[in-house]
Image (cartoon, rainbow, N blue to C red; front, side):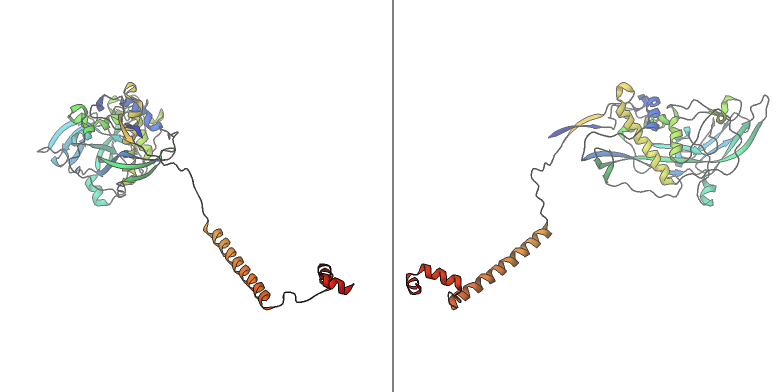
Length: 394
């Protein structure tokens, strides 16, 4: 029989930049485990996100802040990153996060294709050579919440992490009742745990979902940045100085991502004006955990968008059909071989015993006298039956 299918992957006509990412990104961190009323296992087509992340070398992309310039500095982007023909330099403002926090940065636009860039001032478990090649020295400014308080500047080391996003198609076996993934073919490749330098995207790395509706601009190819930068925001902003130029907000999706990778940030009124960084930094999680958490969030975004539908700010799932087969067991016979073998052995033993006993009786009747003795009862019985004996005894 046939069944209707719904693909939670956007069709070619879905305008990804037109989705209400503010609503979708607010739902993803609070997703619970959904169950189904059906039972059994089902084999379906599946699409997975896979992130490949690495540290950007400061020789390929750098930002040099200027003191007392309202967070302005100089960008230098090399062709290895941008794909341009020559090195580009320009001045721009960069608001980077506080120690042990994370932000999706506008540097993502420097990379062609499906690449997202994070800036994160934490410690990373890497060797000294990779550290010196990738560390970014950021100017961190702090001002006490007092009138005419001076701005205190210090240098804060940070890293830029670039993640290339890939899509892979699979055949999945799913438990319909619990929604648990039982098998995936081809299986996912388990990435290494150690951090490395970032690499250029593999292959063409272009998908129809990155440029739906024949929109081929870079902003449409990078729709997955919008839920982080333009999604639902936490109401409290973090400000380093009294001026608004140093304030930045954290989206709910960025807070959720930080929690997934072990940087649990709790914002309150006091957190809006953090003290100068002091003490050792937290160590960033492994590359494997970072990539897994990012891939899960991207998949959750599309799943939520399909569940909401176009009327609620998402998109309508693509409808299709498939053939479903069902096995029905009418009769079922269970045979236990051990009791059957014991019963057969006992039956054969009784058969042999009965043959032996009946054979012995036949032999005795053939070779011996019919009556081998005569007692009182036998004599009385014979006398009453035979007239000759009865006359002789009377």
